[in-house]
Length: 433
Image (tube, rainbow, N blue to C red):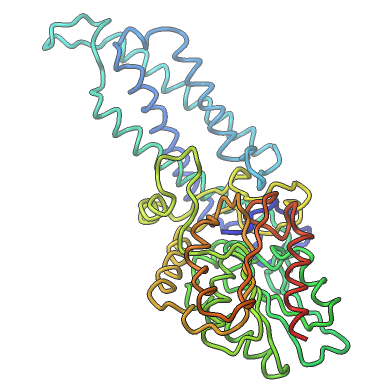
């Protein structure tokens, strides 16, 4: 999907999206208490399946208090995330409230367990099962869903308020579009398209390298990207496609030849553009092929999981473990969302479906360079070959070239093989002179 680096410190002057509105904060606070209650019930349900006696010890009270303190701290400060808030008086208050509420509930549970009877099943009080296993499962599912909603909403509010952005435009610092005009471009320009959730920062030093090679360079910021996840949630794949076409037309109006380079989702947009416009040369860098990679540890297909959760959850948190880049120095340069709107994920899948239905490769005549990371954990290289490889059967000999890299993950242009990849792209576009 591209993108996903750390966020900048909060702006000092306050920007367009500085913080969640008071009404949303109040709503989130109410949900926090509901979530805490359900999570404690889950703990009760799991333990009491083995008998009421398990809930009469002192450990129950202290477990509840510890849970309340942890929940208060995690939901307010989110120290596990790159958008974490600093520990403050608000964090302390949240922890105190969570601990006291959990203590009160823990005392109630102990009293309940001591007085419980289950004579209809002929069991003693100590052996009685307080909650049926199916009820326990229901509590776990509902509690987890509500906790996820609370956590993702809080994460979204933190990301919006703690990301440095322009007060005038609301665009995140470092996510701005890039325009580099060559002093003597010879009528040649290149359009650069970034990936899903990302920004022109996905492209690393490629814009500067192409500019140094004598090309006018325009790396656009796709609709909904580089501002807030809320704005991305309000865009669709048709807008992304149209933005790429409009940017190409603007360059073509002033240049005789325009090449297009696309990374990840931008690669699919580049292919669509090359099918509808007279693109001079085409470069696809780990292009999205309609399939998201499934982690080795997951028994479930990633696309299936997204389709399952998108109707019930609006946002998910994208932790560093899901940032597909090996080079830590490169990861520090990324500017991308950490809260993912699942509605936008649906639009990405819709883009892939349109690609499969429209077969745009049949209309592409531009010489094409395909760059693939063999260990791509976002857009599988094998599927990339399968989808984009047929271009090699259609284009004349030497006009479809595939280059592979083994030292990088998905975000190739900021990973260990970035210099080699940039050299390949520059050489490919340079041969068009």
